[in-house]
Picture: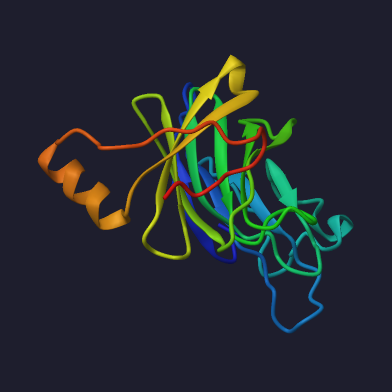
Length: 193
């Protein structure tokens, strides 16, 4: 209990409870309530509406989130969340600080945060992991990107696989994907025509 707007959840390897993204209060403008990523164990209470985590001293009697994101001028808005082993991939609709929309990685304890995929023009809505690939979809509604991690995730080979409708169609038919590959500069995502 005590979550304002739980958005998506994922079960990471070795975790018996889901990890959930929670959107903080962003209205009225200037509200300082951050977004959260929490481990939703049975009986946990993250405090909303009595505690918004804008002032942690008022939240002492509530369960601690894995991550407190913000507040910032614009909400980072953790939307989609996926897990590959104990690594979490979080689609940040607004992004962190000045990076804009992005996908970040963290571990199940939230102790390490890294930019994973940046350079989106439109906000990032979703992320998923399937057969070792990380997928991310942006707000344009017609793009899903497949990302291959290499060298422990330090260099990514990003591949636009198809428009969303084509990906869903391929998944339904279990047909192979047709894709073209290029290696963009590290830390940036480029749309492949």
